[in-house]
Image 1 (cartoon, one colour):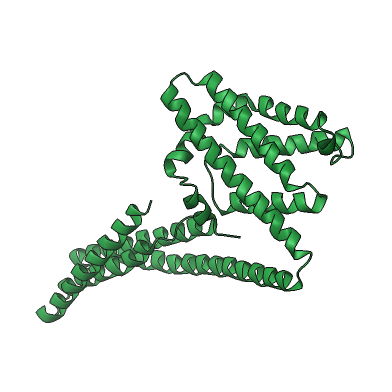
Image 2: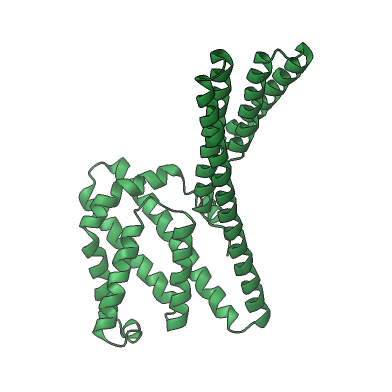
Length: 298
């Protein structure tokens, strides 16, 4: 499977699209029965579709799952968890024998239902067009991922090499997840150490030289703030967010600034302080360039 980020980019799915879908959420939650009922009626009137379901209770259960999936279209959270859920849907369809053309037809019915709802509820033509374009994007993305997962699962049944490749990829993904968790735990441990350092510096304000200890404590607080940013960044990455290199550059920048403050208080040689200041300038420029690049890619 292609990375979810690449798939969204191929469909030009942007932050504006995410915002529009969130705006539609209250409306679609209110009218979800219209979409589900349209799909239910198609299944009941199509013999080939009706044969997929063994009895009415199974069909009702599937309709509940479709309701949950439909509402998730407008959740605003389109991360790796959302992506994995779509893959599981495709895999499940292959196991129970729901052929791809049924999924394509089902998405088409949902698409028409969404169009009817938007046309009935949204007055401004310009807003209506934007909402419809965004709905088409998210439905096409869903269909792309679900059918791709279906076909991959089908190929596994015929190719031993493909099954081995799939296991290796799954092991690699699991190992990457475990490594990310280990990194978060390491950052938590280091943050605890920085909290101890910060508490010690604050304690020394009342026992040592006020001027020196305040500056040292301020430097420790800055490092603590950056460590929290590191943890939040890694957690967001684990949830499928973008990896922010700027936060790591920020750690180097804040650490160097702290060293400059401490060196100034200790009256180190002018050459040493000048070297630290030059380092701050260089790292500051790198930080600005990296930050600007990350913002441009949003």
